[in-house]
Length: 333
Length: 254
Image (cartoon, rainbow over all chains, first blue to last red; front, side, top):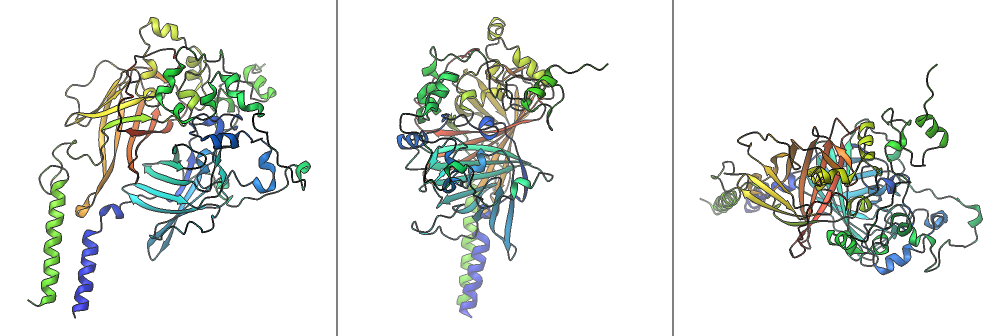
């Protein structure tokens, strides 16, 4: 009798005191289209080598990144290094989110997206993170909880990776991510805060927007494995690791020469991320006289699906035939 | 009363007292009623000094890009033509050196902003960059704004979650800004028109280490110069050391 009453009492307590916050959540299931209005060059055509702007890199991270060459990812053992759990924030395609339910309760949210080695599974059932000595799977290990309409995610146990696209900026396997996933109406915002005691000097913060799109293409969401293959026959079975020796990377000065950007900003020093740095540039920075590469973003895709009619932009990136056709349209007879 | 029933009753009374106390702690209004004012009912605390972390689009936000560099903004043909005609000298001559400091451009700039309550229904956002002031108004203005301004007129609304059964309240701020004076989304003359509508969602996230981030998810909808709504998220970090606040006037070139 006493036992039953105690049980009922605890159930009553649980029902009454369970914070509403734990129950608050929003529907995330669905497909989301990318809105690539930030870091377009990196997410679209690809970064310029030597462009580490906006990064709070340590000396070790910078040194490692400067060893990178664009054919390094072609080595078999490095072909998946570009595919860390939250690298989707630097990729050009959409994502899909679905829930895994047991007994009517969401036990995990799963994110699939372009170019991931694995789906990112966010456990919601209260399980702890594994031992620090546990294996690091391709997607790391993630747990989440709701704070209002934000799904707060902690990701640990990641692999060593390249954390931005195509420039060799490294992230160590000691990185931990906090991801904040918020949906407002049809807009999905994902903010990641990466701590890396090896390659970063302060947390690296990125925030991106997607838009709910029930008609979104699923094609990019099904690549949940990283397939490796021999990309450069010249490297096959040679044991060669393409690289630049320290101090010999010809791209180290690219941003300085091409965009007049000070080298400390181009090479990712944390203090260059804050407004006071801009004031240091007053009087010394001179913008290039014109834009000559990747100037137009959306517009350079003119003539391709999705572009508005009549747009022209000569920045040298369109195939010549297409550029000529658009800038010198043939008049009807 | 048996001892077991007494236990249940005691627990129930205790819980009710606890819930009532928590209900009274939040909101500031009458127990069980709506908060007395938007300030009293704020589900999140936006006040303080926030600094933009320029970890995205560095080359377009930290410094003035060259004319014609319109990458990533979904301009239409008319918008592109206006961007390509950018002349900062003309803006200076016309006294319009603040064109890149209107709300849609300002928030993506290299700013520090101080958010405070101007009164119980108005949040004030001051920036050192361009020395601008935005007023986020929860109550309708007594008289509709007539002249268009760089910061326009902003209607604010809390989106509240949680709080039931005495639990923690969460939420966001949603603002919609209209009545804007035509300005620039980017320092190099990428335009928005007076018909632009600027919608923002303000979320505050507190990390276990005490760091606080403000994420502003926003949409610029401009039927004149954009093909599609321009949707971005901008993040800021709370600064407890406010010594780097450095007001500087608008500058049409740098």
